[in-house]
Image 1 (cartoon, rainbow, N blue to C red):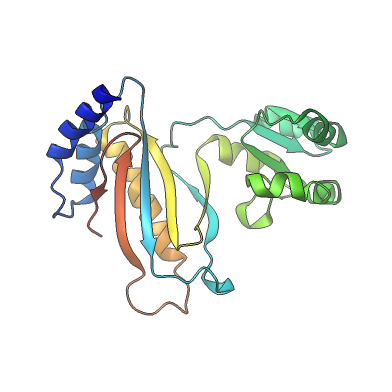
Image 2: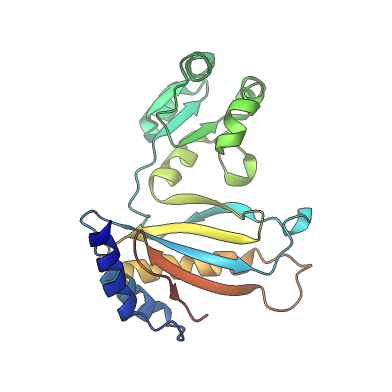
Length: 225
């Protein structure tokens, strides 16, 4: 822990806490602050001027990152279109058999579930198990669709989901420390544009109060919008 704290202190000296960096500057700097021995994740955190208690101010959706975020999603497809799902790259495909494996064996070796609409009757019974883990498929995130092959391909190619928390914050992983700065910047710009597009009509004044990026063990870097 002392060694980690020493590296963090060194990274902290690189960041001017009083400054807001341009997107390009911030992405250059965040790479320098990622000093762990593993390939650290790079996240962006937004503090938004929204009231999550208001239904029309809850943000939930998907973004296709230009370069992906470096994470390979393991996909479970619940569908009768077995061959289409397998060909598109689903890691696991099935129907009630897969849901029984989840409920009886506490099996969760996957990151996302996609399903065709005709399977939602089966999935609906799993709400108490999948809901708290954020795994329940939803049309809003494109994980319930008749075109399951396209949904699987999009997720494999960098499509990510986002959802604000109860305090009006939004955190999204957009890359790895091993990415070059331009790749990180492209992904970050795509996220900022996507967040601005879903600004609720009822929000008055400034929408994005603050935007900060950081590596897994690095300090926060404020971004100027």
